[in-house]
Image (cartoon, rainbow, N blue to C red; front, side, top):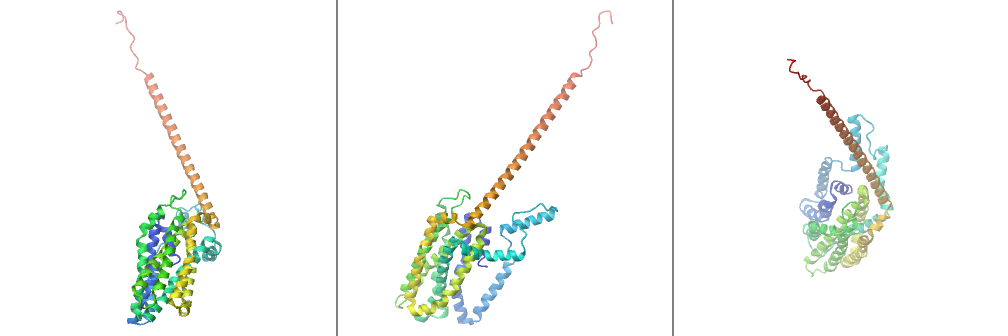
Length: 398
């Protein structure tokens, strides 16, 4: 659901409002690290650990039932279904679309399941984005380790109260989402693609660069203020605001960049990105306790913050050179060729329809002219047949 739902949002959203739609969608997954500990802490404290498992199971079942009501949004599949429906309704096998490939279900599954990994392994754009977003995502999930160590072990907070420490990250996430009109104004101030009329994908890299700067600021600020306990607890929580805001901007506008760059293959590109960042999000917290124990929360957090600093150049490079990098992508080249072919076919079809309309108009004009000429001839004949006049008679012929 996490990997496919961004592709669905891309399918049904106008390019102009894609950032807003992705922002609204991101409220749930990006606030998971906030609402999870917040709710889970109090559930564990008052209902026991079993209900921390029952609640996700119940909510997952409800989500599955809701997912069954979602209609298909993938354009090639919709077009194939429409062609099949026209063949059946009109009993005419000539109806077809360019996606009507005679591929078995097994082969189709192989293609769709392998494509995200093939793109992740062969596309330079995804190399950089997958590493950058995965590291940021993994560090975000390391907060599940760092916050309990700081607020429970060192500051003595209870399970429920320690979940409130994540509110700083939640505020930063919501702030980034609610400021979407400002980010959209920044994006729309950039040059537009002459072919699509929309801002070029690199325009989103400006917002990504801001997120890449805010993330280490929040991480380093938390690391330097979390301990000793003589520092007021509001300081490390407040540094969660730029941390959460930076993470949100990186995720949302990184996703927008990949969606705009890969078009119909956006779901596959985003799926590979989701798999890789999920691996990081699951693996890094496993090493968290040992790292924080060996380095202390201050130095472990500083190490992670410096790692995020090293990744800042990635969105900046794409801001200035992303168009050149995209131009070298094999998949994007193929997509552009397909678009050019489709535009050529559409232009030929439009010209053919125009010629037929012109011919029909000319035939109508000729028929109208002939009809008018025929009417004139009939009128002339009617004027030649006049009533006979009586001959004049002399005076003696009466």
